[in-house]
Image (cartoon, rainbow, N blue to C red; front, side):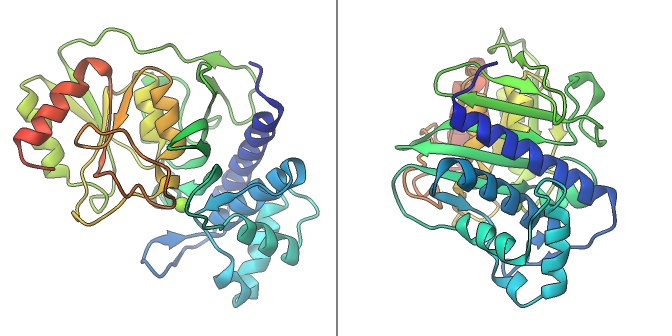
Length: 326
Ligand SMILES: [Mg+2]
């Protein structure tokens, strides 16, 4: 596997952040609620700090649109010190000022132009359950991601081992430009090329969120029934779902908004979407329209997510329209 130098920097930053998350998960920690009621842990902050600091050390001052900001750490110094301690797993001379500056440099909010987007822990609830979560970094140019890096520290590389338990090695996926998707471990450098989509049989495997607040599970069931094919479902947190589709473990990832006014955020999809797309999957919204990442931080032109094998994507778009879900 040979990557452009800036993408190799991004990959090593992402793997370092995966080690930080794993070290936090091995100890005891709690979560606090953000203004939108979603949980955040010291690992979310430390992961963002480590990745942004590395990118800035090697790539100058890139535009980075990350999920977290340092505001709440400035007023909770005990928590800040816990974040600094966590970051030191991968950034030995991290200190308060450096960590705060890195987190804030990763919370830029331009509304256009090329950018990196970062979800330092996607699926924090999965992280809290010691199940699946992902560290997600992507480079967007124009309306689409062109580089994708997805770290899944608890996802076994062997698909026969299931997703409901934390794996010791984990999986990392990376793609750049029009190259193949590579899979390696968090610590294991041995990379393999993920094969492109093969033929599809009659039975469909879908992957959906564990959290019922993220997707209308009864609508997903109705869509699968409408196909008239036998189907099964894998519940999985985070953008690890895109990895399951990219590597052929599932044929479809569906996200049907529970709230029709909900608009998806770029960092929740950019990395996974380009990785699945480069293995030949079709990644669109529920109407079949391409995802448009040109106006961060939201996918304002899109409704929901449909990532599917090309042999079933059209049937799914038709089913969703026939059921009146868009
Ligand atoms: Mg997150």
